[in-house]
Length: 400
Image 1: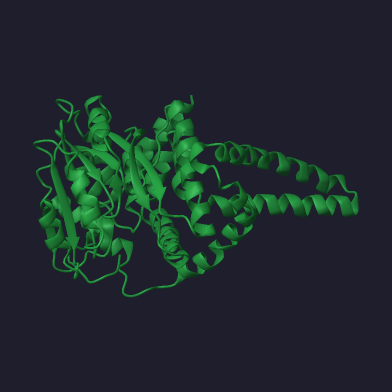
Image 2 (image 1 turned 135 degrees about the horizontal axis):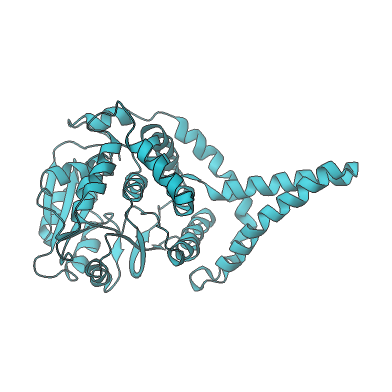
């Protein structure tokens, strides 16, 4: 019965009237209509959007090129850079697609590349999207190629945070990212549920990538791609045998700006793609879990809120000796218990050892999100609205 209700809701969402031909729901329909690949993709095209990344590409490209096979391609999208990014990329052996003026976001750069230099990519290709400063570990590309040949149509490599030592907030953020992948994504995989894409280390079969990328219109392209692929019924598999080393922001200020962009993006996604969100929700527990992963952020603030509410209710119950407040306090404490178990399991992971003492600063990490929320509410520079970005093919100078 649950499956029938979910199917009926998805059908109603997809059949909603007055949808423009270029809408995000049309992108989902294109994904659903994508024919199975005639044979498993054997070639990989690596795509690296870059904006003023000349300083990091010499560390990223040579080790990556060493992992590619004959017939593979490595593309750097120079999105309006002014620091010689294109020259450095060509010197390292990459192909370059250059825009004279920035598209304004990573998602827009990917969409532009797919419509131009990447127009040849089809179901016989696998598309690997990396950040300019990401460094694939040894055998990463080989592991992802094997996944494609095994029939995986969308997958996410393990994103291993690096260069985060020396700052409590950065260390707690890295710990949270690792725990989500090694615990939450592992649980989803065990249940056959999709996992989220994470911006770097994203692997998609070529035809699915081409259909999904055409409607990117916010600044969190990883969330959009996750929702489009999941709403179309394709699985997203955790491919933790392949690892991508991902440097964290150099300062707490840079990290705050990054998280402010995430918060803005969440609002834009809910506003622009609410039908797609409903379609994912209609897929049942797997869809609900995925939506929690991409939209129920920040988790630390949610857990801190539950803990504070439980403490307040407990204090009221002790003060008033009231059963009316004692029962909710007990129930709320039971609600927090899974979070405590989750945290205990996370701190036992080999990758998070040594971070237990940092938990003293966990309340500070939750409070850190307050100025981030203020930053997210500010307009910075000339930003195009998501709706205009979805239809506008012109370029404009913008900061990533």
